[in-house]
Image (cartoon, rainbow over all chains, first blue to last red; front, side):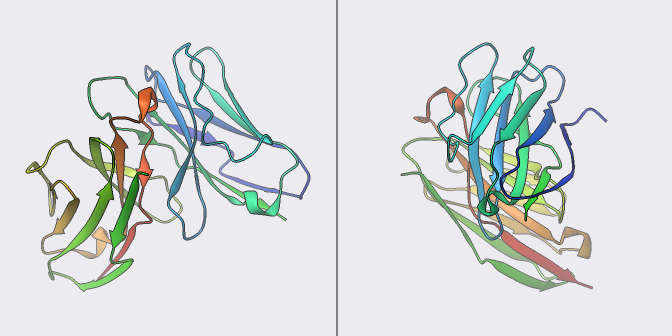
Length: 115
Length: 113
């Protein structure tokens, strides 16, 4: 299919380790988003990339979180020195730019468990 | 501050028993209101976008409506395969170029045969 893909699907790590999560957006989509879904909470915006513009990092919870997008396509979300409160499902979404509200299409997510 | 509240948190229906889910929102200016369906272990699946009060959209047994303060997702004669968590989200016109979605916590729907 031509949907958003994410890897790995599951990641178990020890507290203090670094992790990298990957997102492949839908081909041709210029906008890419990362969200976090914690148990019992709504999806929480983390970061936004649009073309060659500077990313909107306003949702990143701490400086341990960073993300990059190479070549306007694949994105990697990195969490350094993981903590137990980082355990959540990390979702990536992409959209094409247009007028008004535009639909975001989500990947299956990466379930991160920090022991 | 932009806010989205969904009710009820959970809803159990018998197959064929119609009902509605509510999404109340507060935004500076509504750019769009979105409904998603999420199955366990999967990412949200897009259902509808609504842009202005009075707008309605339908898809199979689902119909979404919008007022200036809330949206309803009406489910007519549901089937067990409609069981899922339904998420509502808004985009704020004054949220800048980001177009980030602000989500509610969802309604968990269970349809029993």
